[in-house]
Length: 320
Image 1 (cartoon, rainbow, N blue to C red):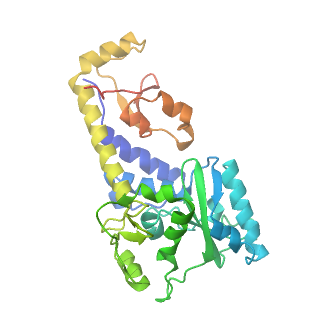
Image 2 (image 1 turned 30 degrees about the vertical axis):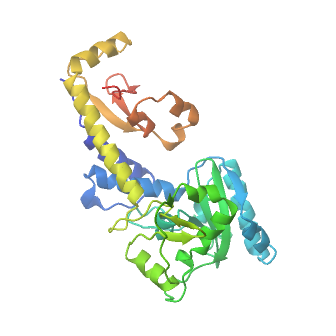
Image 3 (image 1 turned 90 degrees about the horizontal axis):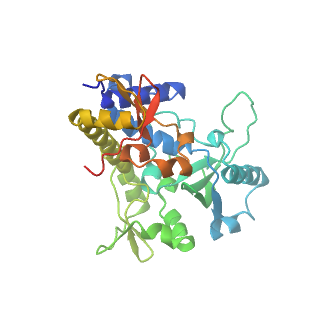
């Protein structure tokens, strides 16, 4: 029988990935694959992958440029250039971006990143100087929406509601209405909340249906669980772990047929062959690569490795 433990492999791969990128991790849960995947997805989302994107400005932000100081316009232009070319944006992000325990309430709720409009005065510092102004942006795989530039919300100020201001969603509605339509709920009116109520509910990891124009909108960022994790990422983690376990069971149950098929494809495998589940690097997941991956695991960024030969197998059991 083949030797494999795919859920164990998921845990090992993510711990290795975290260590290589200096991402902090609660080591007491380093053997829990679902917890690790739940932590990995938001870190990847917050880091912003290096890929060229078309940049779209809101009319409100274009108008605000006239009153924005030059010291903030320069980093804004540099951020635009890096999005367009696919260059690294890490220095403009939060200093806690590599903290796997961090929960980004704005990203979970509104689906918006915030980038510091500062300059890099110290070459030994990995980040630009923290500034009074942020760019709020919606980042997709191929496009980025420059929603607005605003002052840094004051975390200790009970009357500063900038992180949860629904006006940001209204800017998206006015400029790119189709973006929010995919999150529109039918048959409900949405909540009418004060700024203070909305801020308090987000602090308590409560999800809110927001009234934006004539639409009732579910959280565009995916929503938040009671623990503060992104609901979309928790669902994806559960799905990946179930898929890995299911694939392993199918290989074990149908091993004779699987071995025959591999030999027919030119891969000599032993009866007790060792297989591991390995994570494809983000850089490898180009549209061209994704186009040849047919299995659910492959499209999720994972492939089975035949240890003895070093060959990757895109094992597709979808028809079974």
